[in-house]
Length: 147
Image (cartoon, rainbow, N blue to C red):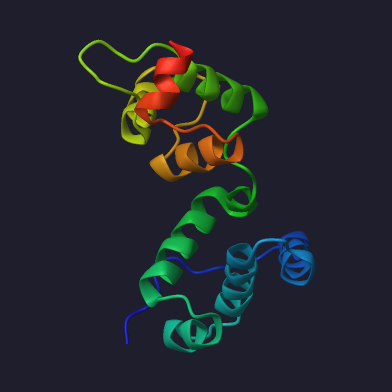
């Protein structure tokens, strides 16, 4: 059997934080992540961890990779309120030349193309989540009212 490429070794603080997420977490997927990382540290196999957490071995690999690169930052929000406000303003602005309306893909591409140094790139899923949170719909009727 081959060795894991990303081996998890937790500090005491990280272990404590992961146990807190596991006990008090509001998000089920973050609880699964915490449980998976705690189990990974104990040298459990991916097959055993995937049976316990219902995450695929491929997901476990990506989780370990992300955790080894970003540590506990993978559990924090990836965008600030300021970024959210700017994204909403962009969604409510006039659509780009040559497009009928804004789409989540177009918003994501436009946002990521115009990043400042202090901003992080965002995914389409994050854009969808922010728009849904603020009840913003990108349909034609919506854009006609706001242009």
